[in-house]
Image 1: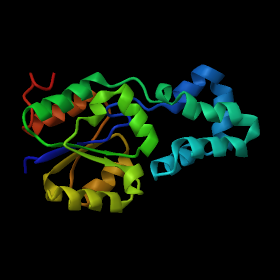
Image 2: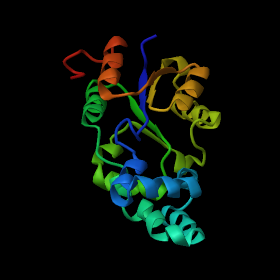
Image 3: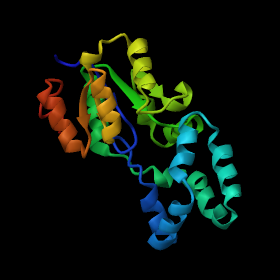
Image 4: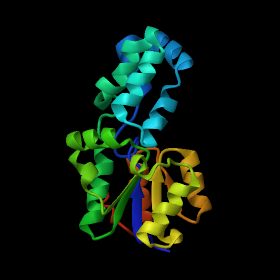
Length: 206
């Protein structure tokens, strides 16, 4: 079945999300590894993605680990550097789909305040036909509930949804619900997939 709507993850699909790379550059790989071993920073970020306040959640975590206070606060204070740069080819693909009238949705684990901030730096984040942002939904991928909520809201049968995400667990859950899926490992592969599904021509996907 040709997809009736295309769903983009955001982190590592439209914007690079590489906190470890940022910390390696700023504090060095050894200190970064020690901090990540002691502090569950990705768990902290999940709490933001579940709707926790961006500043309050990160700053509270920083106070729990005073020896890492400055570094943990960087997750907030330098956040846009963790979430950069944009993946330009993916952004062009999103625009090409919308230009053809193909509905394009986002489905992303993203906090409320952090998404609002990101949208000021990346205006294309507001250019979707429907937005599914975990912070507002209070559930994160790969919980099946977030996929069910998307299905109920958009009204499109699961088999007609095409979803791109860089995480295998997120893709596996979507596929289990009958969605068409693409495991994103770079924009060219995603472009080729959109062509193979008959949604874009090779020229449009360039």
